[in-house]
Length: 319
Image (tube, rainbow, N blue to C red; front, side):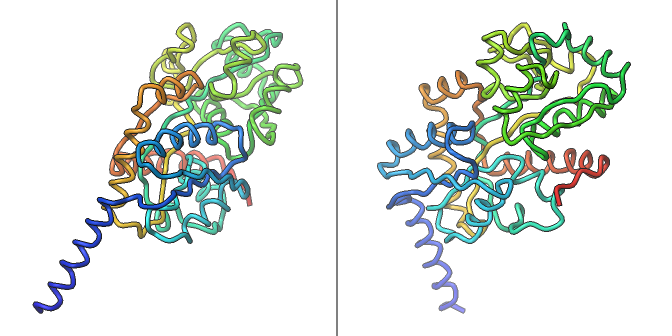
């Protein structure tokens, strides 16, 4: 018995020492999207400051494919030592298990939350020449012409798609979904008048909104966005349940020791809270967060309950 206790204590001491010296070599930060998008910007912005803080290189590795499943599966198989981390959004951790009958990874069994880095709130936008003057006008016209309005999205199963489906349910609308491969081509067709509307995050849509090419009608956020102070929330319009955002956080393989997870959390949150990083995030259209592993885990549980219900009720599948 004494020998067993000694072994356990030595393992605990080793884990504690490892956490105190972590990281002792370069970190690999996997991003499940191509370079240039919102998740890539967020990872590279935080990674640059994180690298300075921990005095180790942080290497961003873009691994797009499989609706983020390829990167998630690769992270799940990586050594559980904290040196491989993944930028994971709510597609990876919440939507995919409900959209696919089988996945190459399990968000709850294979991946451990570290922190939510930031939120990309969704915004209802219409083309400048669409004729819609306000969100109330848009909803009224869509309700009056069931099936008469098509809407674009960044892709089937994306936060942009599901945000509009949520609005459809809450406002009792029938509109036809036209998925694109990314927010940029979808926005281009809304600007060009091929489609009248879409939900878009501020990071992707800010330039189009500021340039007057699309009109922001309402934000799916609990409060108005500081970048769009004149645009009402859906709650102000009577649709309090229409809240949606792309939630981008950091996860690691599930067997990663809690001491290492907590050390990573402190380091990444410190990078997010660095004033220049926060400014860059806000300017890009991201709401900085930086919470604890427990808080992130609880958020993911709550998001899973509400979005899985919507996906089941609407029988949305990507298989």
